[in-house]
Length: 329
Image 1 (cartoon, rainbow, N blue to C red):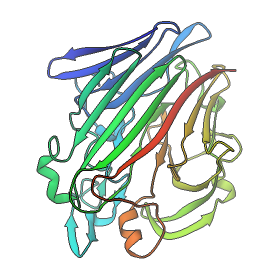
Image 2: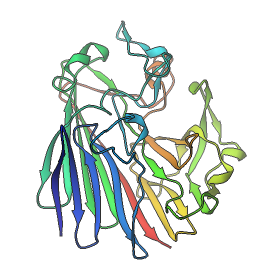
Image 3: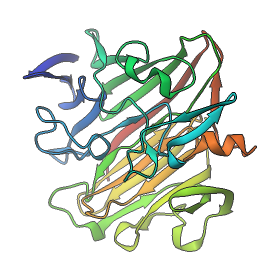
């Protein structure tokens, strides 16, 4: 049995999803990016939260790209110099990464409209470039509506997305997630006992965190196709050429051997890149599924297949699902 309820913190609204049969719950910040910032599951008799967010994120949300599960749209990661050309027009975006690049899109810190689904533990969020983002219309080609649905079911939380072109011209786009998973998964665990696995055969060559356009075989020191101890790794890399199973899923894993459980991150085949990032302060790791690589819109102009997608007017693209699943060892 599940339920979804609204929690109010002053000017902020958070959606709480509960699965009573499994004693699991999740929190989604409706007024700050539709950010899934908590996912708690009982493991070996104790409730564990696999996502990391600031203690007061519900009532004092900040650091939009540094907590929970930010949604990155209409572009994930960086656009070089915040500048690109589309259909003969030059676009200049706010350079919100150290005044050098544009980063992480427009929706991750904005309020979304939400609709609870009383029949189960789920919530639907919608954000529109003609409403919540009306002041940003000149920054991107075309107009869009982005829908996200978060569903809690036992030991899994699933995210589905749909992108609709509501304008009168073709619209380029890319979608990504930037989840912060706890490291170690258990607050009493040790990083040395944690392992990561990402089934990717190649990486994008980067210069100043931007793809040069070359895709290289994954080098031995960055190879995550077999589980690797996280204490050995320092990562901020874009992995590609993912290994999908017969059902067109790719599965990444975080395993905390000492705590006795594993987090599976399962992705649908619309996601073709994964950024793996170990923040310098540690305490977390990011496994970020993207539909396109960093700076895709500029690579596309150079004739490079970077995953940039284009929607015609009234066209809808469904993306996902993304599944976080907790399993005991």
